[in-house]
Length: 122
Length: 107
Image (cartoon, rainbow over all chains, first blue to last red; front, side, top):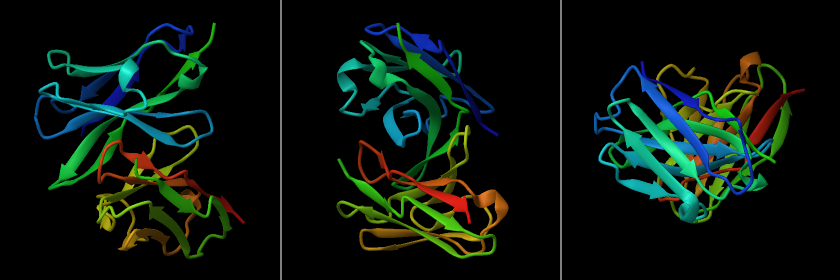
């Protein structure tokens, strides 16, 4: 059973870069059958898709974040990572990593990591 | 971006009630619609994918349906563990977008 776990600093200063890693266990990130995604949730708010990557490092980013966002994959460590630059308080959120599963052209997020709260504050 | 609008934003219901949550897409998304359940402090959990397919392990009291750009999540007989927030999400095109959520509370 595939499990995902986020890790990274819980506090980032404004204008700095937010960096998070998602470690995948119970399956290989290189299998080619899935995309690997980040989703965030502002405190008390709804969900926002951030972007995804596949094992071949093809990426797809939310245009609202694209200029500041980078998602990468490390197949040797079975991890994928998010970097968001020039952060502001508006980037304070719980960040989830999730696998994008699919059947034909249909896809969905499952499973999810437990989430990690990142606060942007000086 | 495709806008997803859920209604109601919240509802109060009793154990055993039949509950219906609606999600409307701003354009046609065929059946590219998923439903998730989120409990406080937890990650969302997939319930329904492709509008009406029940995720493995999810109780059969959950069901999904579609009519045009309107999608419905139905809980046939509400159980205590079903009190949570429910989100729809379109996977028709990126950026993937979610509804604002429907909180199901105990009456």
